[in-house]
Length: 547
Ligand SMILES: Cc1cc2nc3c(=O)[nH]c(=O)nc-3n(C[C@H](O)[C@H](O)[C@H](O)COP(=O)(O)OP(=O)(O)OC[C@H]3O[C@@H](n4cnc5c(N)ncnc54)[C@H](O)[C@@H]3O)c2cc1C
Image 1: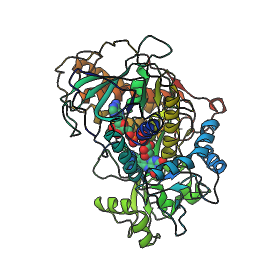
Image 2: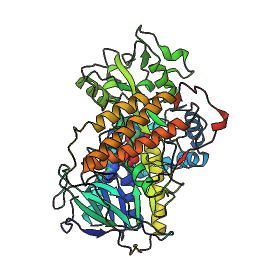
Image 3: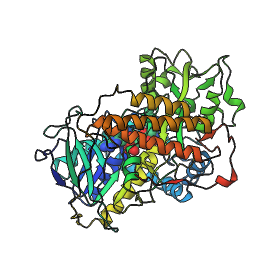
Image 4: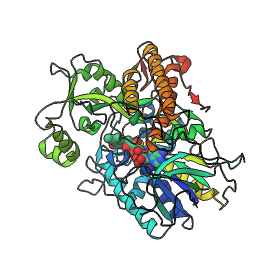
């Protein structure tokens, strides 16, 4: 999939739908829409290199679907609600639980190969919060296999010209004043105007993608934290893009910290994940004295919901270790090749020793508010995947439910677009976004590192008002420094600066939401308000950005 040769700097191209982000949510949207409306054209845009960006290819444990003989959508829904700690939207949960089996069938039809048992039925992993094994998997590289199948299908669509793949960062969503159809399309800072899909560069050109509908499938916000399982591109762009376009955001205080990131000795920001399926296969968590501390913390011990396990690990004064030595060698090799090899590159051997673990940012639970068809509060603007918030995860996401909800709600959004798109593009010519001075005052480039360090310190798995207020001040100071460098509040037309701008907007919205929620629930744990507060039960915090 290469850039069409007719795109030139300053160009405008018209497509029917602009899909921003080419992970599972973006790919499912594009493919399922084109299956139903093959006459349409879809632009699939990504600021990263295909296959090397986003969380989808990294997903390990599996996709939760009630396909086992001892399972049912009702059980899947009940587990999801339990993990969500009284904050899930029951309608969204019921839809996801009921429709995931059909989406698994779609993935297999597109060529995804999942593990099976001798009788041909799907082999299911059991992960945290699941009453029974429910995670459809491809060893411990489920996301990579899904991505491979979906990308192959997208390449096929690209061959017949219905899909174009553009590399670059969407930096703004132009809107018309027509209330019933305000979406004009997307402003894209295209990396390689005349090239193919090479390494992103800073030599960019601005392109207007005129589209009837825009799908935001930009993934999560791990790039805002110093320790995360996410990749660099996960800078929460959907929050800034949708928020500035006037779409509502919600539940931003709920950020999931995965209990078992491999503890990093070298301070790297991206952490290697040790999938929960290891604990599903029998691995234990040990304290510094070699004791299983989860036995006293929760009836499900190591398979308790993630926020419970993460908090228990952080409570261990001497640190925590994951012990997988009881898993037979052949099972480790067959079911966990990714973690086995990955841990070895960091000098640890899961087969012979307990390995040090620590919670790290993993998943953005809140996001752009969507209904059950992926529609945001701005007509024509959709969101799906980790960028969206349908309420399906409540206050904490259960294992396997991200891939599940991404497939289900992206599919539903595709059906909604297929039914609505009538070929009418907005005829408004939008003003290009304004940028700051061409040559910003050089900074030492430490803004990202400083933001990440501050977010993990004050806005991590355990928070309080004091830490959150200090964090808010750090963000404001970083913003003031950025404005000085940019010569005003607008960043220059340089990807790094645009991303930092987006990160600061998203971080501040997350911190404000965390400050306002004066209780603990799910992934949001505050030492100054350690319990549920009935006043907050069922209350979602909607965020509307103003500038
Ligand atoms: C290590 C790891 C293991 C996981 N394991 C599991 C699991 O076993 N089961 C499960 O259910 N979930 C798992 N998850 C979570 C799950 O993988 C993700 O939530 C899901 O894949 C997100 O898909 P997505 O399509 O929303 O976004 P992504 O796959 O993250 O893709 C988003 C894309 O958008 C692009 N993008 C972002 N901003 C812009 C912009 N402004 N312009 C253009 N492009 C942009 C990015 O470059 C990226 O490629 C895991 C996550 C990680 C990190």
